[in-house]
Length: 103
Image (cartoon, rainbow, N blue to C red; front, top):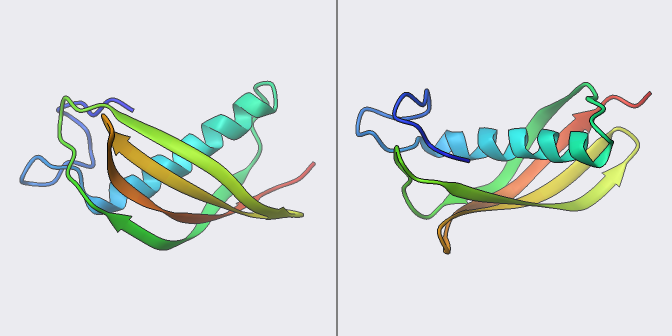
């Protein structure tokens, strides 16, 4: 994920807000799910974040790598863990609880 200078998640100090990591991880999870389902987009939403921690800063011009790991899924509920890196530095990690409508 490339952080652009007009990114809506940049704070007054021009650093990425901590809550942005959660949203970016949720969006990356949705993109990965669509990719794994051959482009099919399913209705779903983030229903919670747990033990999410930010360890470093990101700012305009940085590129982040977002890793997603499926930990658990049952029916329409699931949990993924995520790690977000700037270069090789871990800048955030945590778990997301998601709901996804099944066909």
